[in-house]
Length: 130
Image (cartoon, rainbow, N blue to C red; front, side, top):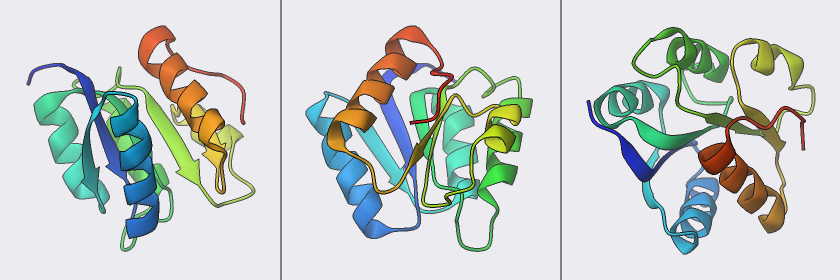
């Protein structure tokens, strides 16, 4: 395992959302590893220890909250900030209880995600839902 301070893993089953997040993050100078399933994200996170993980909760064949729980309960990945990016309107406290560092509801504004990424990567978790 080695730290990748300018790498972000984007986990989302939607090609459009992965592409949008990839463009935003690349414009901010990050190396982006887009994946569409939680198992791949877990494996990659253990190997490279990215600066941030964006995680959709509605993944096919997987529950994003289970992926979040696994990330935050593993000593190798527990310190990686996780930004939950979801379309579920009732999300929030449960995901924070599981260790999400911030929650962003879809659709989101460009400045919202840029601000959260900067805060999470440079300053630690953002406690308030956006």
